[in-house]
Image 1 (cartoon, rainbow, N blue to C red):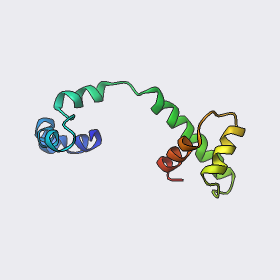
Image 2: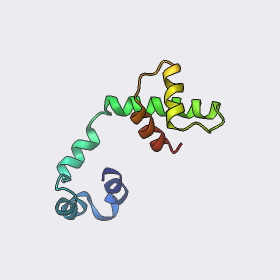
Image 3: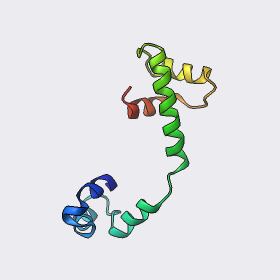
Image 4: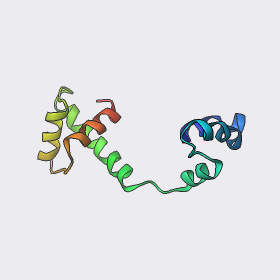
Length: 97
C-alpha cells in the first residue's frame, strides 16, 4: 500500500488515495497511518531479512544456483546462521531464488 501511495501521491494526493482504500482494504490505511508508516524506523526483522537474503544469494550462487529450500537451509545452518526451513523458503521466494 505504501509503495502504491508513494507512486501516485503527486498525481492524486494522499487523502484522495486513502479515502477509497479505507473502505476496501481492511480499513487500516488512512493519511495519518501512511505518515506514521513513512516515519517508522525499519524493523529488526526487515534488517535481518535483508542480511539473510544477501547471504542466501551468495550461497546459492556458490552452489551453481541449483539448491532448493531444503539444501539451502542446511547450507545456511552449516554457515552458522540460525533460521528455520520455512523462513528460508520465505526469504528465497522474496529474493527470487
